[in-house]
Image (cartoon, rainbow, N blue to C red; front, top):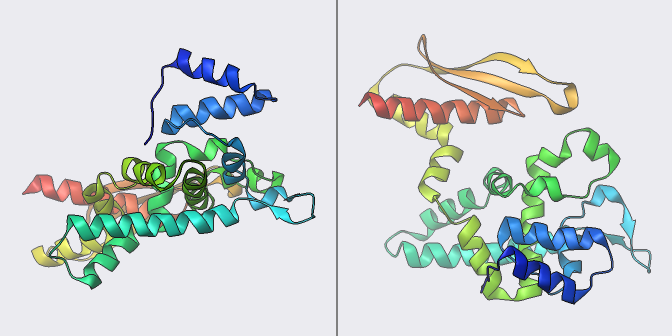
Length: 252
């Protein structure tokens, strides 16, 4: 079970542990601040935040990064999300449960959750990934979130990992589903209303090539219904579609 401590209690715990490095103390504080966890073994979390681009190796010369923890975290996440859906929706078919689970734990969804806890700012990246915006890349942050789940599982057991997943991933599912399936849902709404065709128009691009932001407007016939911003055109279209859905709902 996750335990929340006051700041003074946390500092006392850290002082008693006598961590050898200032950075490790900062990591303890950071983990508590973002997810409310007091680690027993800080090494799991250090590895969870270590991207393969750093090219670190252990004493045996084998690569050390978060990929193995990501593998473990993915399995824990699948079990917890499957159990949640099975119990929460007893009348829903296996096919629909599978489809819902896939949208809940897909890369964009996990990256969205990672942004909520600002996980990207704690990652250790190689110079190349750092320079090309890897700290904000969905593929990297979603993998890191799964690695973090793996670390929590190894450090605190299944109950802690399950509680973390429920607290930070299996929340606001309807709103998340609306966002991540926004283009499909918008298409269905427009078709049902026979309101015309949908198109996406790139308005502008900002920033250098390695860290570009795209602005896209979604059009229904000749009318603009929402403008989205994203690090890819697809992400910008997704946000624009989400805003269009909200706008259409207000028109009812």
